[in-house]
Length: 98
Image (cartoon, helix red, strand yellow):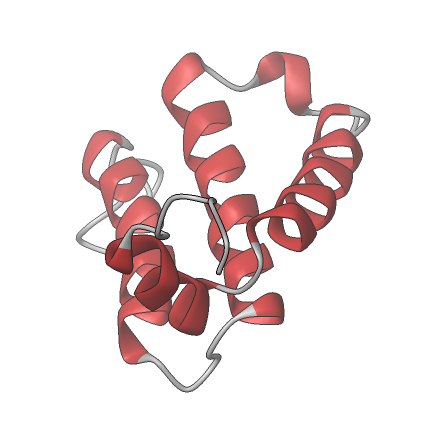
């Protein structure tokens, strides 16, 4: 019999859909490093950078967890939608120059 405390059932369930946290962390951090090395990174505002970093985490979950779970895909799209709401013409699909 083990003296280790029982694992939180929520963590066990999340691991099934999100993948192993350690693996997700490695992939997400590699993606974020790539993002931060891109030429336009410094030109992005805080919300745009945060959206991309959150998308990196969501992508890592897709790659490590259950990629068939539609919630992962909805979350990823949601971060783009938040940025589109704030860009001129973002939701209409027309740029201000049109």
